Structures are given as structure tokens and as C-alpha cells.
Length: 583
Ligand code: HC1
Ligand code: SF4
Image 1: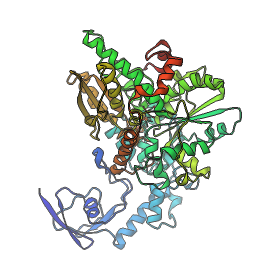
Image 2: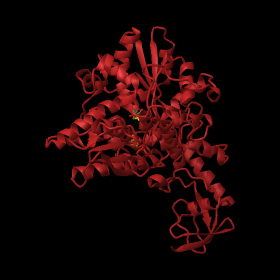
Image 3: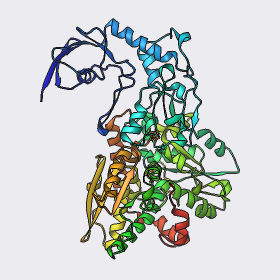
Image 4: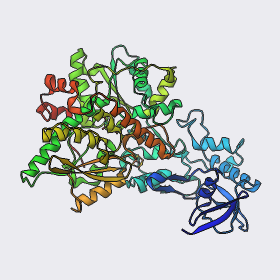
């Protein structure tokens, strides 16, 4: 390894050739401010357009200041990161950025979590000279079912573009225009809804300002909770419990399942349920579908479609509908747990408590922004009444809890209500990449082999690699499983299948890094991979501590089939729990 010796702020340092000044400085504890720069090492994604110039430093012998994020260290370099010239330049750059930025910080949805606002505080900006010369951009606000684009607030950091194009390979966003009018937008400046956007929310998760934010459903939910005519029930996704605590100052990976149930009850929900119940139901349906396809395949049926692809992630569903229209009969037809929950709540449960469909409101708490779009899809409604009325993100729920004076940290641990609140360990691992297929494997193994699975932990299906594969022995029958998280990784895996290069029986895809624990609606983690790892570990901890860890052993699921659905893939189950896809 070739090394480079240089001096930064009077400290001598030796770094690997190719290291940037920014990274070298970081090694010795010098935190050069950055705005457009973003390094997601765990995803192999680095955004360094060197566009904002906030990270400039002085290099002895060079006339111009150098952007530290993209300037490589050279032997003998003498770098100063905090001279008066540097401090003044940074301030001027920021003042220029602020000069054509709206000044509605008090009411901006990003207020308090805005990198630009934080930078103004950090650099001590007290006035914005030259504003009168700046041309304020006046883009209309673009509302989609999940994401709001307020392009007057775009600072051209290009982070969203990197996530959308390089990591997700969706290509919904690109830079347009010049100077004060330059922004990132879909092709031909169309609205997001008309672009190939999947609503994964990964652009929102990295946007440093209020340019990209989620559609806020909290006011509508508050209105429903205040309506005495309505019975309002809530379901909460597996990954929420592993991250919500971060919004209340808890360490990443703190499980808050009990406090979450308690908070929802105090917010006034009439019944506090768990999406995990529906995740168990998904396994019953999807697992049966998988085994059905495998049996037909083994009998020599050439028309059977393998591998089966999981279908619970709406960003992924949107992606394959747009990009793989020739493969629409390959994914499982099982609806996502969010939608299965809604369908069962508005039929079976509404009936049980004697409430009319129109008077029952179903709210979901999701780590995901695409869930907002999913619950608005037409096929998931009956005569215009949606199965799931509103989907709040983990971040929106945290706001709601704070607004309602609930001291989250001091809440007691409470249980979910029955019957739609009981779940197994298999359901909770849906929240981490590989979890859906591991849960399916636990059930499919027992149904296929008619043997009891002694070890329910399939470590070979876990991990953070973007694409993973493993073979699980179903008592002499090898079952080949593939896993991808991140849509770019899914694309690679699917292309290999389409070309016949690789063969699998089943594949799990989740659109977001790490699966739902890294969803676009989760507390912002600023690219810190250790946060994702901690959340993942929390998910597996909850699974290990559950008394029942296989979906088909959930007694409330058994009761649902006995009382209402009949059996997995029955006509009723097909009608309520399955779907079809559109190109
Ligand atoms: Fe997910 Fe799912 S795991 S998609 O990531 O299948 O959002 O958490 O709720 O529906 O259960 C999300 C999480 C979630 C569904 C389940
Ligand atoms: Fe791209 Fe996802 Fe953002 Fe849509 S939500 S623009 S797919 S990163």
C-alpha cells in the first residue's frame, strides 16, 4: 500500500494514497464542515460533487482554496482547515446559498432537523448580504402520494440524485437549469407522480433541507381521533419498534415495543394492533403459494413461475411494475402485511365489534414512505373506502407523541390488543433484510417436510451484503434462496435471473438499505451504518424473546382461518389477501 505524508493543522499524518483531505482530517479528529458531501460507506455510495464549497481548505502553495471532499492528499502537502481566509470563504459561500433560499424556517417541515439551518448556526451567519441581487426560484410545490418536492429549497447538493440513480438505479431525478434556478427534478420537469419514482423515500432520507419531505398525514389522523362517530384502530410495522426510541434520545437499537403500544393508546386509538399479526398471515399465504409452485415444478410443470418474489415492499412492487413488465406473473400475489391487515380489519374485525366499514378508520405506523402510496392504490379499496386510511411514518408518529404531551421515555410497557395484535418472532424479523424469507422458510420447511424445525435461526439468510444467496436443505430437497436490499441490487439479481444465469426458488427484495429498518420514514441516521446494525440486532432480539417463533403457530391466525378465511389460498383469502400487478 502506497502511503502519503502530509500536515493538516500542524499535525503530521500518514494516509493511504488516494485519501481525500476531508477523510485524512477526519482521521485525526478534525471535523471539516460539509453540506453536499455524503459518504454511505456501507452502501458503497459517495456523493462528492464538490458543489457547495463549504468544505474548502487552504493548501500551501495553491492559489485557490481546495474543496477537501474531493482533493486528494499529496506528499508534503501542508493543509490549513481553519485560517481566517477559509472561515470567511465558508461564510460567504453559505451566505450565497442562503441568499436565494426561502426564509420560512419557523414553519418549514424540516425545521430543527435541517443541515442548512445547522450550518448557519455552526458558521455563525447573522445576516445575508446581497439578497436583493439573488433571483429567488419560484417552483410550484409538487405533491405526490408520499413525497412533497418544494424545489425553492433545493440547494443542489445532488444527494437525492445519487441515492435515486446510483443506489436505487431508478433514475427519477436529475439536475436541470442553471444558476439560481438550478434544481434536481424528474425528466422534463414533470411531477414525481409521472416519473418512475417508487416512493422508496431514500432521497427524502438524505435531503439536507426541506426540499424533499414526506406528505404529513398527522392532521387527518388527529381529526379522525376526535370524531366520536369513528372507531380508529392502529397497526404498527415491525421496524418501527426498533427505531422510534431514537427520536426520544434513546440509543439506536433500543426496543420500544411496549412504550409504543402505550403511546398509541394515550393518543386515543380505540384498538392498538400490530402489523406483525398480518406478517404472520402473509407467511401463511405466501408460504402456501411458494410450496404450491415448488410442488408443481417438481412434478414437471413447465409453466410454473420460479423463483417466487416477495411482494410486501411497495417500493419494490412499484419498481418491478415499471422495470420488469414481462415478469408481472413472477412475484407472489400476496398483498403486503399492511394491506392484509387493512382488509381483515375492515371485514373480520369490523364485523366482530359491530362497526360499519365506513365508521372504522385504519391507521398504520410505518418506517416507509411508499406505504402512503400503497394504501392509496385503487385495488386496495372497496367502493372508494380504502382498507388502510392513513400511513404515518415513524418520524410523524414521534411528532404526534411530542405534540400530545406524552412523556415517551417514562411510559410503562403495555401489550397490543387482541386479536390483531398477537404475533410471532417470525413476523417481527420482516423488518430486517432477509427476515421475510427466513420467516417463510420456518413455516415452509415444516409444511413441506412434515417435520419439526429444531433450529429456527437461519443465520445464512442474515447479514448486510446487498445481494446474498443460500441453499436451505428441506430434508433432502435443496431450496435455493436469494436476497437483495436496495433496488440497484434487486436489479442486478433480477437481471441474472432473467438471463438464466442464476436460478432460485424464492427471492426476497426490500427497496431500502437494511430492509424496513432503513426505511425512508425512519428517524434520520445520517448514513451511520452502526445505527442500521443496532436496529437489525434489536429486531432479532425481539424474535429470540418471543414465546412463539413460527407464523403457523400463531393461535390468532389459526382462529382467523377457522372462523373466517377457511384455509390459506381459499377463495375468500384470495379475494381479501391477494392482488395483481399493473405495468
Ligand atoms: Fe415493512 Fe412489512 S416488513 S414492508 O418493511 O412486509 O414498511 O417494518 O410493515 O406491510 O410486516 C415496512 C416494516 C412492514 C408490510 C410487514
Ligand atoms: Fe428516487 Fe426513491 Fe426518491 Fe423516488 S423516492 S425519487 S425512487 S430515491
